[in-house]
Length: 172
Image 1 (tube, rainbow, N blue to C red):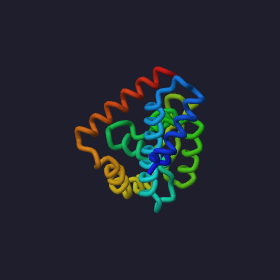
Image 2: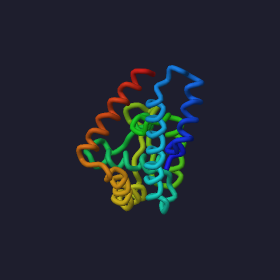
Image 3: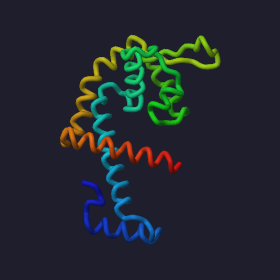
């Protein structure tokens, strides 16, 4: 249960928010809080399925993106900028994650043959094995997060989240 699910807490919070900006839409603040809460819960579920690996969800997602690139007919490797874009995080964050995964022997980096200033990342056998071992369970945990919604509700939620994402991207 969220702190703001308590009526008294919510009223105090909204009065505080209103004192900061009287023009604020209280429903917008409530929705933002709900989205943050759900996001944290889903992130926690995603990470809890990876406890045995010793990896963070962010690290595992890099391995999954590389695994997907390999298995979906892409070139089997991605450069850090592509990984950063797919993860939705900064290149500095990706660089740190890549270093850790490389130190663990789960990925390999090699110079890009077309542009020797860049390098590409690929899975090692150990990385591929780890993703294969945990993908089914990990994706099952994620699926459970949304199993409380019907297929139609999931489609509606997906549509609404895409609409918000497009709108927010335009605000930046």
